[in-house]
Length: 257
Image 1 (cartoon, one colour):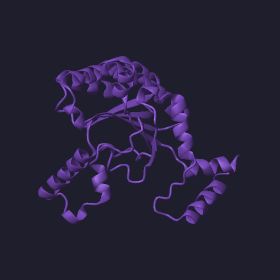
Image 2: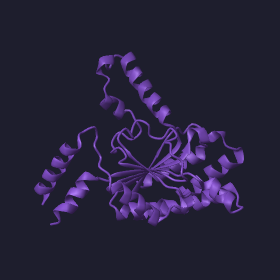
Image 3: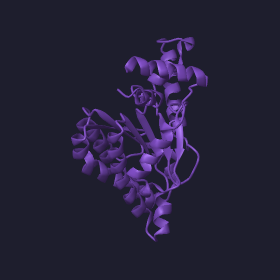
């Protein structure tokens, strides 16, 4: 058994990858196309990253599809995005089931039409038995999620179910939108921007970041490979000192060999 390979996999676990899919409009503008064409091209890349996730045995893939701030975009673009989402759910549900991928949608849903909410519920239900998980963050904001969790804990205090001193990081986590999923190991953002834009603020305390220069419609399997190789060259410390991590990884590798 290759001990070095085992140590590498221990030092660089890759259970959850989050992606901020940025640059659809700029990609389309460069080509003289409509913004909708950029979003349509971006949907094709979702299939590529699902393929790549399977290749690297990634358990969870979370995509930032529509932020709570995106409602401020032109109404025509918002309508087009909602239409594309509905189309994706209808077309991809069969393939998601065949891939054994469970779909989850996180974010507010009160701005969605009854038809879209029904379609989301049906797709989540139809794919619920999947082994891997695809999370779509739609009408999502990290501050909203944290505030909503705090509000729920405040209700529990008000009802006498818990005391304020009982509130812990664990109880906050249990009231987040992904309480049962591991936090992201890696967050990828395309289009050269280097910010997280209110995405998974609670969950990404120790996440590694990779910023790709290409626009999202150009982020294919090869680009994903580059991001993973970059990640695998890093040392994740989680607040520990380098020598302690090396000893821990070496000992774990010996035990598994």
